[in-house]
Image (cartoon, rainbow, N blue to C red; front, side):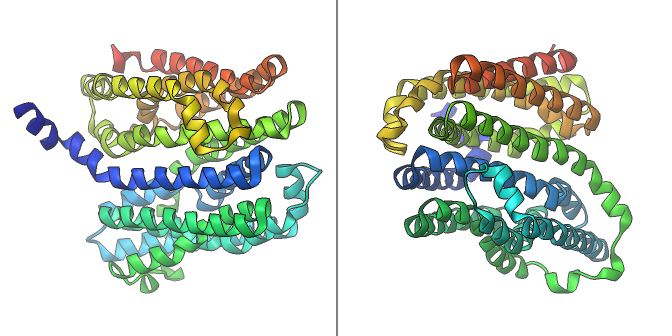
Length: 424
């Protein structure tokens, strides 16, 4: 009983429990969405959805300038300083509006070009990119509104926003896919995030008068310069990463087939669901601890705490998922997706190595090691791209998940050598 009380009173348990409801709802809604997509649009449609998601991630990174993490930091530090807070919010919004108008224009006027690059020459989804051009400002501003709410320490509101956003996403996806099949699935990916703008605007209005905080006259170039540190990291992970995945998926479509590319999208979706637990725990609990750890001994303690307390449980979870893979695919998708079961071993192996390396990679952000982050990220993306092309030529679609495992083995090895003092 004492052990149970000790666990329940621990900070790790409290933080994990606080996010638990939001994560479970997100996973539950994601599973329902995956089932709807699998039944109504099939593997081929899933592959196109995967391509658009990768493209959207890159567009988001460019349009948002990767400032979200910086916004949380600076808003939290200047919550009581109203003038400085106004400068931060004004600088953010003016920058975002300018960039989104520029990016939106490029999406609208060159829609046929983007359709060909993202979906291939055999299809024409130009209207998807024209719709994206109009919804993009609402989408990006909603990201910043959430970041400001987070920076103000209104954690419960952030959780409510996530729950509402995921629920809206489910309803919009089901409606559009039911009405317009593949085109509807693509449009739902674009429309859903922009709808969160109205919800986040409602939530933030009770905290600060956002309309009075935006003023062109108090745009601060110093604040913009400070935030640019986060832009460099976002340019690599948020733009190059999705583009590499897009190139790989298009290569799979051309060399193996559209249906097989859909199988890869399916296993990637499953991976996203269970990695949410690790990702959230690292972001909410371990990242702040790494930020305040100034000595190698303190950093080592944080890292090994993750390896001893979290990693073994995650490994057990991965073993369970592997043995239940046939049941999982049947429940989540349809009989057309049975070949996905052959991809589990390499995907799970790669994700385990990924989780081991994530805690080490967090030091790049915690200690602001921008150059080292960029070099290692480019290295991992290069390994992923080249090994995917090579393995796909030999093993077909299984080659992609094999390349995933190889990439994180190399990445973990490099990080282990680079951060050897933090480890040993």
